[in-house]
Image (cartoon, rainbow, N blue to C red; front, side, top):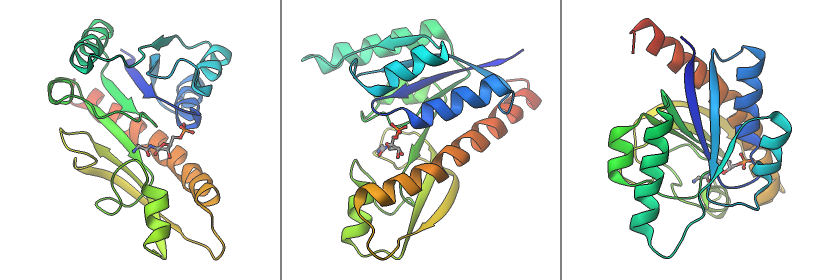
Length: 191
Ligand code: GAR
């Protein structure tokens, strides 16, 4: 049976798009049941419409606890085999990450440069090499077990935007390959 994926995204949605296209082409043997965003105006919403994938908008409100509870209930009702945080700029609640299988893509070589400004931080630290990491999500910030990493060199004259775009090219390939492997191993383990 085809494994279902729920994507969480907050921004441009280029990673979400790469995952969806890979499921539609058969590169990933699974299907994206929906993309949940906390940003109803984000570009990812329009991308999902074009790709004919359901978008679920769940904007943040002043009551963070109820937002977390609703996110839990939405996800429970969709029952995904895998939740993929692909540019989702929120920390997920401990109950969420201990209940669902959740992975995240991060634009640095963790444990280096965790947090929301990983590319800026790598440049500020004058790192010669940075990269992309796919990891399991635990209750910490970018602290979960690393699944896969790829390096990206920092080039002379790099700006945050230029470097981030080169990292995202690598991230798109890495997240697709990682999801494909994870779903295949779940299938083999009859999960
Ligand atoms: C990606 O680089 C992703 O790793 C990063 O946001 C970008 C989303 O790009 N996420 C984080 O920094 C989370 N800490 P996209 O909107 O084009 O998919």
